[in-house]
Length: 414
Image (cartoon, rainbow, N blue to C red; front, side, top):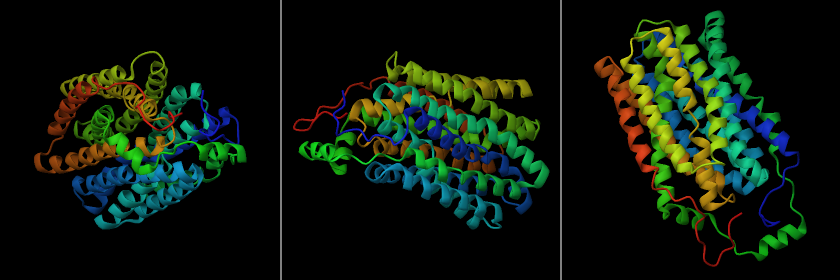
């Protein structure tokens, strides 16, 4: 049982914490998951290559990852609400700059820098950290799955809406509408505030040996299983960011319509909601390292089947369903393993470093997708690289040891 000083109690019920956090995840992940819809209309209008658009989104992925540990550390220290609000404002501003960009530099500033840092402070990763702080222990595995699934539902709802907005009003107006939707995070974040601790709780906390941020980081990066987890998460980011950004264009290249591309992204999101909830449920019933290994192996198999099969609406939608079941289902076991190893005190920060690896992979996946397409006129090399990385990550997760680190002289983490 947790000590009374460890958890930060929510001001509202656990049910409301989960619902509100899931809504934030849905709203913030939706526009990000729809970014591929804007590649062809933007590059066509301004005469840019796909490498220009790919660079902007690659920067976004990289800065999302760079900012995540710092946003997590601030949220761990001062609470989640302020971080979410600042992130939402940056995110919305980035969408506006992206809509008005007429040069590659402005596109990178809006779609890359502002949205990247905005996502690091208001996306589902911050929500998962809040769940770890605010929810009872028995709620956490399923809540991690629910928060991830909610982001997936954003991916289901937003791409068709984005396609409709682009067709009806144009791509710029669609980005303005997306920017306004992000501002919903401002009132929703208030439900994730923490209750002020009592004097007794504060006194009890002061009496316990404390672990500083540098100590927590040193402990994590000396822990072999955490290193394996962080390295394996690189592949997840590489595959997801490449598919999110370049799949609609790839589908167009095969002779299918833009509508098929939008609906493929949408069914990825819908299937991901199921996959994420299933992964959260499985985390309570089997070793998490095995869940991760099977996910990465199955992704490689799905990608091989997709790129070798004849292009058709059926093959595209089936790929969307299959890869969607495996999409963010890595997040519940990854976040749960971080908490198993180190407890919840620095959960947001330590998961943030794992997520940085994820986003570094995303940066390279998007960038290589654009650069190699311009060089060879095809995405084939990046598809096969995704397959190899999936096989490597399946192997690297198997040696992970699922137990709490030993801390001589410190109280066990709660």
